[in-house]
Length: 399
RNA sequence: GGUGAGAUAGUCAAGUGGCCAACGACGGCGGACUGUAAAUCCGCUCCCUACGGGUUCAGAGGUUCGACUCCUCUUCUCACCA
Image (cartoon, rainbow, N blue to C red; front, side):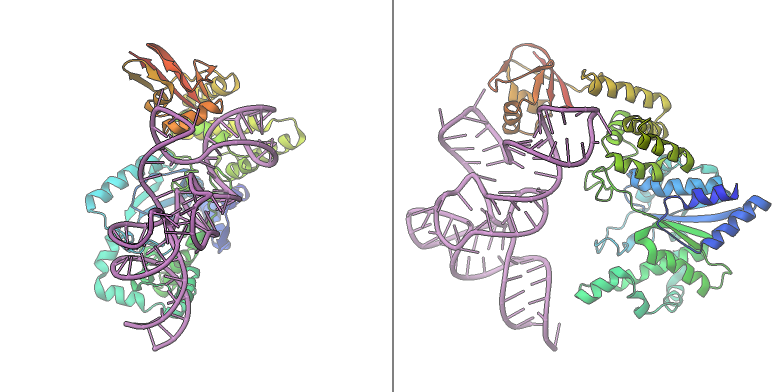
């Protein structure tokens, strides 16, 4: 049981510092039912979560399964500085009500994965504000510039002569201080957070709280392209709020290779179960697509429901395997006979008439499942199902 | 503060008076093949009912029959020096 728990906790992790301590904590839990705390920090800005974020959340959920109380920290104070990892120098400060608003929306999304009973949501302004100038000053005496410059990001910027604001030096200190205040046993974060995570250990030692947190780092999840990290700006993400059909389709569009990565980092299946699937595919007794569908269904179920997942699968088969029209498509209407290219733009499935013409020329446009070849085509009064490529559909009513 | 280099379409990056709506790469889209996978191959990739027209190469002026290319100023970025 302990073995199993350890294996699940280590699963997918990029690096663990002080693994022995984690083992001890778990042992104490299994033997005596003693609980412990796991901290993870989040930014209070726009909590628009995608699967990349959920990698961390799921690790937290695993910890909860094995006796942990999660300290879900919303960095409302530290957000004023901005983590140096991002180049963004200054951030706009959020008002108290905005932060509350975001926190609320965090909870809605996060508790689909985490057990709210075993989660404390905390804000770091709560203990950092009372620190005051003198508290802050004593915090800064625990570290020195040379060591601060060891941080990869600072090092590069220092050497290349790019500016580093003093306030950026404060950021890791404050994040570390959070661990002091919260008396965290373990902190988890992305690999890019290593320096900050270690700072927690350092400060816990400096403040003599009688423990040093273990650190578990998770890798950055690749996006749909399988190369770059999943992010909104690269538009290669699966959002936790995505529609079931979208979500299902997006998962199915990843490569077979990437699928195993997603299984490891996102699935709730045990490593043994996954191994069965993998060897099945290797031997040829399982079709990769079936395995991928299973993953897609699991993910849709998690963020929506089992029913939605089944529907999404049916819909997917309907549209793609049997090339039928989706059940649910946007409807538009126009007045009077309309030129096909204009109609496509009107239905928002083409960005411009120029693009629409090209698409027609390339045979990508269909009306009621019939390929259109005449780019001058006029649509008389009636109802049509327009299609561009394989994925874009719209219903149009010409009045 | 001084000196030098640069700013080109989603990104990178050619173009140094007309052949430029602008090479190429990546990305994206479409087609073929498929499992809406990957790989591969082919086509497209500023806008406009279009063998034509319009608006683009940081911004504003200027030179010229003609400028992304030359000149002036402005803004921003980078490198080196202090």
